[in-house]
Length: 363
Image (cartoon, rainbow, N blue to C red; front, side, top):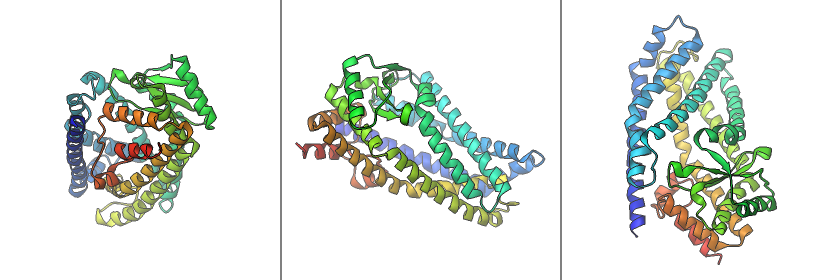
């Protein structure tokens, strides 16, 4: 089919651009470490307070990395999606969203780096353990505040106007034991044709969120997508995901502690808390995260399959699920049948055609 071929081309180009971006990013941080760029910068501000040195080096590394990869970010995030009809946001609006996302990530990243280096100074032997506890607290905080503070920065949210659909979705949430405080619609169509839905927040902050691009779906199709999302809440997948992320973070910090101790001699650092070691710390934590990607995706595909089964069971409507998957595949330009190796290594969800095949098997 022509649509399948278009999706395949789009994802192939995105994959190649992603590889180039990854290679440039790794090459940059390795070059900074090998040439002693961070050490030279730290030496130039040696009289500054330690926290100011850390902030300067982190900011310099981050800004240079962002500038280096900016052309590729533009190609992957704006030019290519517009060429393939996924995005219709203006460049100015897209840059505005990018600026907000960058500000948030920079704020969190800088705070994290400062905490790590404060702990390296205060407790060189146990810094990794306290840093892990702080990271867990941050993960939980973000899970709670995401729907309240962060999502509205990028979307205008309005209550769902269709009272019949609203009542149907809230009734489904209550029936499966994950009641929500309301149904909101995000103005995704202002930016893109892509469609999605989510159940965000915990407890009293839990709410149903629909992209307005889904309002053209049949009610049974919207219900099927929502049932899948509710399955994650019923199965406590958010907490499972936080636990998995916690394990990965702990492993990363343990490996980083070992590598940073070795790096003192390898890279001529004064001690563990020398800000010149920041590129080495970034390389080690990044390498652990990269190695964990296939395992993380395998786990994610498992919980997504389970959520699909939940949706099919509670709605008892395979055709509604199939219709939703077909619509989502078309709107999101999904790669319906990726190479099996690519799916195993890189996909966080089962391929669309596999999901549809499982639904058809239930009819």
